[in-house]
Image (cartoon, rainbow, N blue to C red; front, side, top):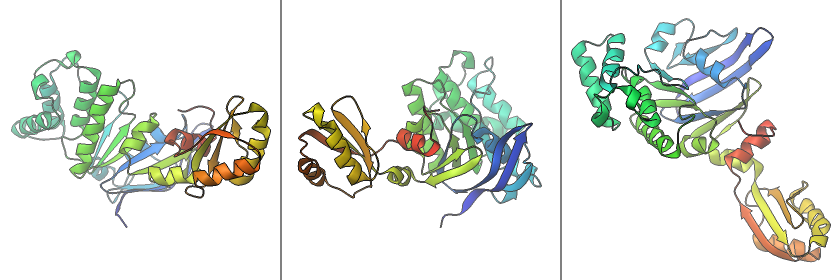
Length: 313
């Protein structure tokens, strides 16, 4: 089993009458990207603040890189990086001067800070813009620079709280590539995101949180397997919709959803049926299918099923 680098056991945290965390238990493997998903207010940011030593839990415990986040807070801070939802760099300074400043804050000598800044600027493709004021950077460039500032001290764990919010698709792709490079170099990444395709693309494992508790964990494929394949059927005769609904309901063990007057959708256990089996069931019910398709569910569908929400976060 991979070594766990972030562990939470029974974390509770309240703000007045609001219970943000209700006994949170989780374990994140070293050298992976872990996506933390959940509705707004589920407790994701509260959990990250505790892991990053910015907030103490009311009860329970958490360890990062082997250190308790309360008793060994200083040691934890020396092994983590944190990038929030908005870039924390100084727009009046150049990218290079921002990095040197952060290096000095991390107690590097001026020479070492400059060397580390040059190394990171080249590695993440910002050398050409290094001496320009950050105010002239695109949104994607600012976010990349913000990520780089977290890497000055070579963290074991990097916490990213919705790092691509508000970015265009090209800039999001640039951030994705930067995250992959970080993990390839040995950094563990804990990522919260409102874009479920982002978690699907990046995450080796996913933790779903709702009402301050973990409700599901697994790889993207494992979570998709929880709700099975999605069967979509288009019938020739709308008057046969009831017969098709009954036949597919018996097959799936759950009631299909009608999409218009001539289409049905229902979840089937993964790999349990082939298309020919489904066509035969419909034929026995006297239903002629114009189109029958099996597809894997999206992570959005998994999220909605698990959290029982009416809309995505």
